[in-house]
Amino acid sequence: MSSSSSAYASASTAPPKLNRFTTPLLPGQFNTETYFSSQPPPPDLQARLQPVKEFVERWRNVEGKRVVVVTKQTRKSSTIYSGTYHPTNPFLLCSVRFLDNFSAGTRGSTSAEYFLSHPTTPYAVIFMHRQHSLRPFSRHYSHSLNPFLDLLTCPPPADIDEANEGDQQQQQITVNPSKTKQLLPVLRAYHASHHSANPTICSLEFVTVNDYLWLLKELAEVVKPLGSRAMFYLAAAVSDFFLPQDRVAEHKIQSTRGNLTLEMDQVPKVLRPLVQEWIPEAFIVSFKLETDQALLIPKAQKALERYGHQVVVGNDLHRRKMEVVLVELDSASSSTADDTQKESQTSSVQGGGQGKAFKQSWLRLAELQEEKKRQGVPREEVEGVEIEEMIVRRLVERHDQWLVSH
Ligand code: 9Z3
Image (tube, rainbow, N blue to C red):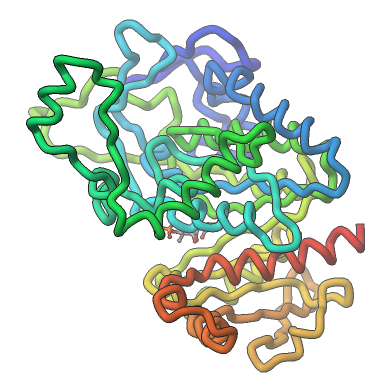
């Protein structure tokens, strides 16, 4: 791996080159400032943001319309450690070797659907997702779990041959009748949100954690005119470590060189500038993922203390589809009647020399299923309910309060 000597100065439209950025002042200790002044923005950053600007502008002019930025999935993130540029497209980084994480992006794509279809307050959604990860609506037909081709009927081969000789467009591929009931509502919602005269979703794609950080920063500025009508729902599993551009090998690392030792630097915590500088008026929700459930609440409280945002959704890796905990500061402005229910508890921690009270409420899928049963929802639908419905519902209530207090 090689190193560089020149510093990155400002966003440029020139294609980025590997190995041209200085090492930060404190190696491995990037803060937001040193990160953005040393790591290159994606070359097409502004072009990618243009449709989002138009989307925000359109919804800003609709009174009371809320917009949520849903981030999900930085798989393959930062951790491209060997790669080169595409031979004919200098903007395209072709990674040969990279590190990945577990998430397919289910949380983000599922939540986006519930934001779009919220019964009283449907949101417009800016969906910031990693390339090739799950998307709202099409997620129901992932190639491995519910293959798309299985939805279709296949005309007999003889008919296909005949049609090939005549007009191919006369051939009709139809949906398997047994799948129609399941497909139709999804298809309708997909068309309404993506292909209507006023689409309610706008997607923004990224590949690396560097793309993600730059896009988030610029997005905050784009969304800023919406003020407190904006929510950030940061469900992306953001890599904690990355390899600075100047240490990414330009060519494939050869296995003949023996064992590979990688030393990665820490990704700066951009939640702090997001909340405190870039867009303090927005309602900001982050996620905390742990594998030791005992750490969830203390670490969520610590994040709230440190960054000062509104809600942390804590989830245990293995139980994340069954239960989550919402942790918030326990202030008069954020307490509601439901917080007095048994699921909600208040606790205090010491931080920065001041005792702060927090409240936490557990949301459990089993409770949502019970609620649906009581409402007489058919059994097969009860079995298909998703915890994101509860999360979104609760966060919309919190956003209501945020808007009243701001
Ligand atoms: C989450 O905790 C998400 O809920 C999951 C969703 C990534 C677990 P899937 O889409 O997974 O169902 O496969 N996201 C945030 C994870 C994260 O990286 N949080 C940081 C941390 O825990 C704080 S920003 O330190």
